[in-house]
Length: 65
Image (cartoon, one colour):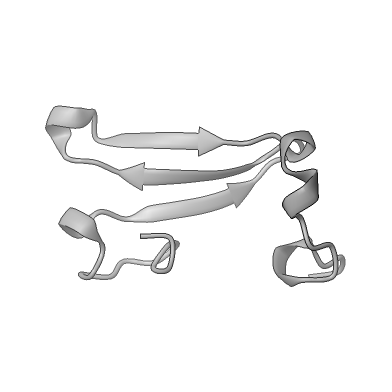
């Protein structure tokens, strides 16, 4: 689902759509779920908790993008 996030794709599990976003304090991802499980779930992880995993000169961490 992460590979196919931020766009609709029938390959997504159960036809669910997942979206990613960034806030001042954390990156987040939201997954669509079947209605019986609550329709969606959102996870956020504080940047301070993942400092060792951030590659500053790479992808979304690159300033000016």
